[in-house]
Length: 332
Ligand code: BTN
Image (tube, rainbow, N blue to C red):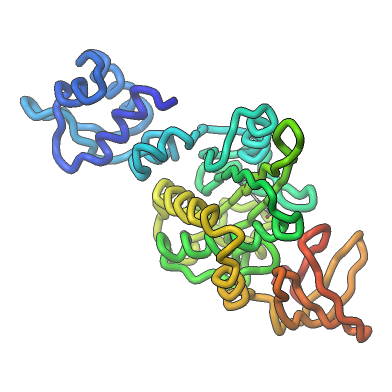
């Protein structure tokens, strides 16, 4: 439930000219003094708001934080109610999964955080996200009657959806490093973690939480030393600040579409995944259960599996699971 402050923040962001406290108070059905109090809170949060005599308030500069009001301003009114924006959380995936398991989340619900203190990645790894400069978003899908083999393809579908959102908002073409990373210039820009739970009294449906982490406004010096050769950000690539709220809204809209498309419109997602897959025709190292084998990735099969010709002559199709793919000399 959005607070008065968030609602006023969104109104000020959307309004091109000054807007009087009287108009805001009528729109929201609150007193003028409640409007003035909320404006004071917004200023304390870092928003630069001018008050023009006889005209009202105007937002001159938004705050740096990714907060509920800023995200709400990018969403339609009916979509705003199912999006929660937190200042800080351990992990948006952990938060949303908990709600899902308590039957307190449903399809389309999203959780976004300005920062995470315990961002998680695949295979029990951590995902660096403590800086308030990235996009950390989890989205809930509920699917009934879909075979589990198709369910496991959600990560690949989401990679295409997020690739498209990044292209639309940041004009960056990303490649997909099988199975869940988006890359640019040989470095990681985005990671996707999909987690499934059985929900419903008779376990008839699957609840899926798709978590997306994008390096948006970090400088190279923001990343810890061990990530400096592996990670990149939109800012490093383009030199420009990303509007994180706009990117979140675009991702939400692409994932909403994915929910409508799944599983019928597989052809589009599969052909786009194949076009963007950055490891095909490359020498790769495949790491599974601490064992490393080398080979050449030769294609993506009908189920988004990675087909690899191993150097020992064996051909294998890898499915998501417990497998890591690395380039021959490093991350890519
Ligand atoms: C990976 O790189 O293996 C996947 C990283 C996924 C990170 C995102 S950030 C939002 C959501 N919350 C998490 O804890 N993880 C995902």
